Image 1 (cartoon, rainbow, N blue to C red):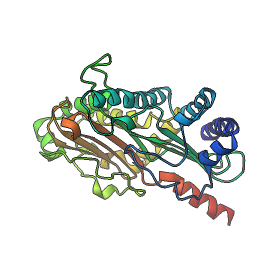
Image 2: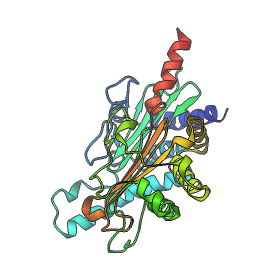
Image 3: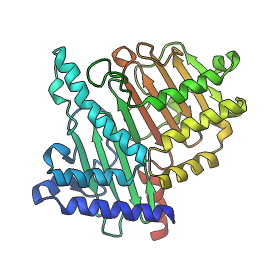
Length: 325
């Protein structure tokens, strides 16, 4: 069972990380599974429950990142690290112009939190949170849930300096632009839900994702074959941030929910470059994806993937309790 193997790898990684901590660090890094923090999250800068990379030794940071990697694909792990590094780039850009609060930007300000006992028989979870990164992995027996998942980038494209031109979330923009280019004028008219892009994702950092707040546009079933393939490639890209086992499982869930009713909505300008505010959403029967690039003169990206059945492992927990009782 692929997810059982994944759950096993994460258990080992979590145990090694927790074992490496001293008592004071362990007090910060761990909590009960049913703690208030389990379904609480944000993508804004600021402290989180857990232990920050800044407060770890070099070895402990390696083990913490190994835990993060255990639930992600190779590409997803690279992107997560790039988001952390990008906060250091933002620090220098804001320091140059004397922007208040530039000191809070730090690639080490990412908090790791293990909830429950990875070595026991009960459900457990681990979280990584910081500016523009929010990962939540829940393990119930041999099953794993990998959402909510948030990746962001500020700046979307680094404007100057040694890393000028660097674009961390480039595929999210490119794949959507290719889909838009594949639509004819009539299809674009259906996909366009507003000429003005919203200032942020509609679901924000709500504990419960409501598909109804995401706009509906052009349905997968109303696209031609080329556009359908591009929409599927866009969805798969988001899913493939997670480990291959989880990504494949998530895609089966998407397909089982019915691709024909999955819709693609666009708002704002059609150009996806800096200075052109735009937003898109993909909404299926059981999942949603949002992408927003409006803030800081449309050079600041927020992306989120939510699975209304699997967020926080709620369905897995319900099944587990039903079987246990």
